Amino acid sequence: MKKKTVSLLLAAAMLLALLCACGGQSAATPAPSSAPAPSSEPAPAPTPTPEEKTVITVGCLAREEPDILYVAEALKDSKYEIRPQVFSDVITTNMATQEGEIDANFTQNKKYLAAFNESNGTTLVAPGEPISTFPEGLYSRKYTSLDQLPDGAVIAISNDSVNRARELDILESCGLIELDHTEDYPTVLDITSNPKNIEILEMESRSKWGAFEDVDCITVTAVTVYLSDDPAKPAHLLAIEGMDVTMTVAGTCLVVAEENADAEWLKLMDDAMHTDEYAAHLAETYKGAKVPMFESDAFNVNYFE
Image: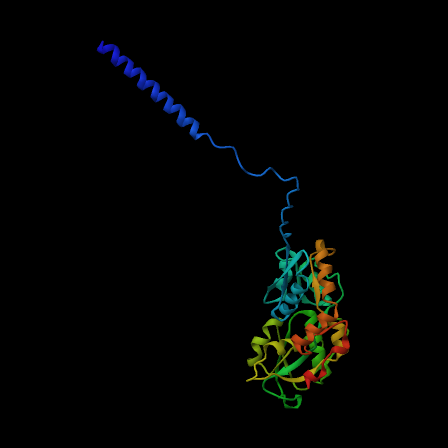
């Protein structure tokens, strides 16, 4: 009798446990969702990501960096990002352009470029028209006029064929020497008269400014003097080439490797640098020491007085 009672109790307990388990599982079942039915309106389009810009690196000397920064601002809404890269000399800049390390450069005129290609076996091109220019003059920190130059005065000039010929012309124009102009690019060997026994020291163009303290005079561009001169030791202008020479010999261009001659970004840059806005930039930045080739009347002769 006791065994039967115990068996009944165990059976009841097992039934109760089973009912509780079933009831718990039922409670865990999630209630139907109360979220609203999907809308029939189309989902808004995702916001497009800005188009990634193509970076164009333009080599320049320090004197041209403001010009490249101007172009970068002018083309900021285009698909190109223009970045200047400052070099210390034209030779390195040209080789970097030839080898594709940079996309273009803005450092030289077409005559210099032609001579560089011939001497170095490079194939760089300047497809556009000359953009800006600056006159070159004879400057001294020791003397304020040509009459003060002593016999044997040392004058530093450039050692490349184009600039050397241009600077020898300056010395001839102010009566210090006479030249035989049989050759297109005269050298010191073509000097036929040197009444003051001027000693001409040839060096890389960018090195002349560093040698200014050690020589009597240097031939140098007006823009270099404007940007680099020390008011405590001013550079005195002794002679300046004529504007007709400046507009013929000079004229800085955008230079690229042959494969970039027809690049869209090159045309955009060139167009931006042949505008009234660019001319205004030159006037504001260089105060007449650099002028646009397409506005020769903008030459500020007062700067040289």
